[in-house]
Image 1: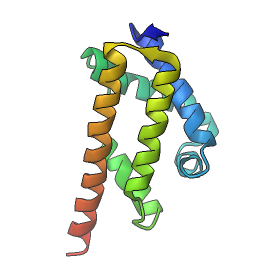
Image 2 (image 1 turned 90 degrees about the vertical axis):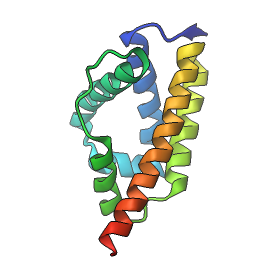
Image 3 (image 1 turned 30 degrees about the horizontal axis):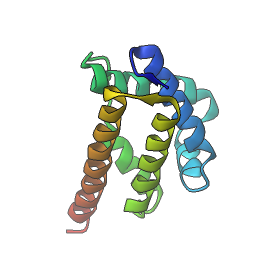
Image 4 (image 1 turned 180 degrees about the horizontal axis):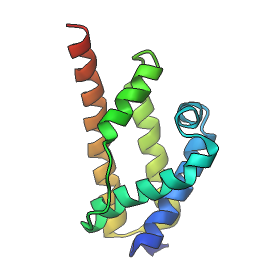
Length: 132
């Protein structure tokens, strides 16, 4: 096992993770609907930027994950549920544990836990605002 030390390590983590996600019977169809085959390389680069920003504090990510999650929830007829985030999080943890250890690996797990919780709550709140 090695520690996450640089952008190349983050790219490896993100690439391996989304290979697993795309093959997952629950999450794969969702992700593959929104990100076409030819779009995956750019998406992996963008998500690498996201995690480099979160792990190293190097500001390189530009995007709005909350809006992306709302778009997915709309596509799922507002049926995105906590179990979707739990599956995502468990696969993230498994991928990290397969490749990395150390302080930044733990930071990636902790950050993902906070983000998954925050994104799910954001989706729920947005639904409530639509229904009122």
